[in-house]
Amino acid sequence: MSATSARPQESRRISDFISLGGATGPLIGLILLCAFLSIATDSFFSLRNFLNILDQVTVIGIIAVGMTFVILIAGIDLSVGSVLALAMMVLGYLNVEAGMPMGVAIPGALIVAAFAGFISGLVITEFKVPPFIATLAMMSIARGLASMITNGSQIIGFPPWFNMGAIIRYGGFLTMSVAVMLVVFALALLFQRYREGGRALYAIGGNSEVARLAGINVKRATVLVYTACATLSGLAGVLLAARLDAVQPTIGIAYELDAIAAVVIGGTSLSGGTGGIGGTIIGVLIIGVLRNGLNLLSVSPFLQAVIIGVVIVLAVAAETIKQRGN
Image 1: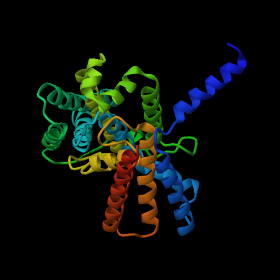
Image 2: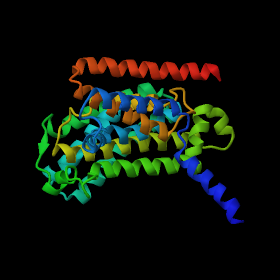
Image 3: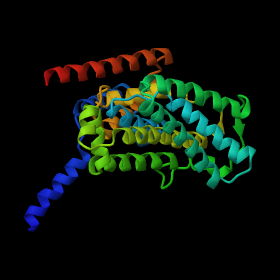
C-alpha cells in the first residue's frame, strides 16, 4: 500500500474514533451554553472552573458510560445509584471494619457490584422480567443491603492517601478521579468502535430477534452489559468514597436519573440501537456545565432541577422529531 493511500485510511480511522455518532446537535448546544455562561458570569471561563467541572461530573460520567451500553440494547437500569451505595459500604466495611488493605477492599467492592448487575441481567434474560421491573427490584435490594452492613451508619477512617488521591491535582491538572474517568471514556470508545461486541449492541437494540438470527448471543450480551454497568457504578462508588473520605448507605439517590439524562441529552435513543459514548460524554459535560453555570448565577437548587428537567424533555423531543424526519 502506498503512502498516499495509507494516509486517507488513517484519517478515516481517526475520524471514526472521534465521530460524534449523531451528537452534533448536543455539541452545538454545549458550545452555545459555554458561550452564554462566559458572557453572563465572570468566573466561568477559566481553567480552574473547567477542572472543577470535570471533578464534579466524574461519578455521573462513569455511571453514564455503563448506562449508555444498557440503553443501546433498549434496556434501562434503575439500580445504579443503589449499587454504587452498596459498593461503597462494602469498601468501607472491608477496609475500615475488617481491617483489610485497599488491594482487597476495592476488588471486593467491584465484585459485589458486578454480581448485582449479573443478577439483574439473569432475571431479565432467563425469567423475561422487563428491565424496568428487574432493576427497580435490584435498586431496592441493593439499597437495603447497603443499609444492613452497618445498620444505616456511615463509615469513616480510610487511609490518608486514599482521600488525597481524589484531591491532589497531579501535574497541576488532573485528579486521580478525573484520570480514571478519562480512561473509562477512552476504553468505552475503543470497545464501541472497534470490538465486535460493541457493534453487536447496536444490532440488539435495533432488533434483538434479528440479532439472534444473525448469530449474536443476545442473552449473553445482555447479561454482560448489565454486569458491566453495575461494575462501573461500583467503580464510581470507590472514587466517590475517596472524594468524601466516608461512605454511607443513603448516598447515590437519584444518580440513575442523572445518568439517564446524560445519555439521552447526548443523543442516545431510549428505544435502543442509536447513539454512543461520544454523545454521552457531551451529555455529561452539558449537565456539568449547566449545573456549574446555574450555581455561578446563584440560581435556586429547586429551579435548577426544573431547568435540567426541561433540557431533558427538549433533548428527547428533538430526538423524536429527528427520527420522524428520517
